[in-house]
Image (cartoon, helix red, strand yellow):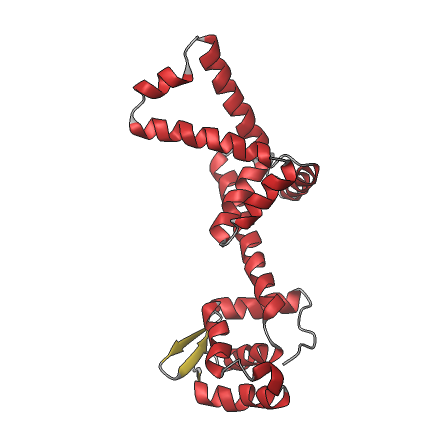
Length: 222
């Protein structure tokens, strides 16, 4: 398998933020992990112990760990790429700004990486939403945000936001019902429905802040 094919196979399985975080860590530490695996293999070789013999005497949990290491080694090798090396350097340089390399406590380094990974995952989700959300749906979020914790009746949202764009763009909304229109907001956790009342979520508020900060509040269709 070529490097490019390996990367493509990885991208095919990125379907959730948790997977993004896992891949982020593997990419960032792939060289260290590969070196560690090589060192362990050398120790086994020097002691003239066959891997197969080690596996035979290991309890089930350790056997699984060795299989994972072997798979991880293959996974890391498939990620070898000059482009990934470049992005790895960018990440390291970004972390250097905050003294990551000089930190002596491993736990703090882990916490910094987790926070950095979470921020990347959040941006990934926000960008995915921003790419497909309609302007009128953003208007609903802004309206609900102004209502604080009061929320609003979905029938009012329909008459105030959906009906006007559905009338203006009949070809677009002919097969896009109000239920589907609202489900987009619900499925991405931007709003929450409680009976007929609709409320903006904390995630929805953060999304509004993000599109303002990222300059993504320009004119949108529908």
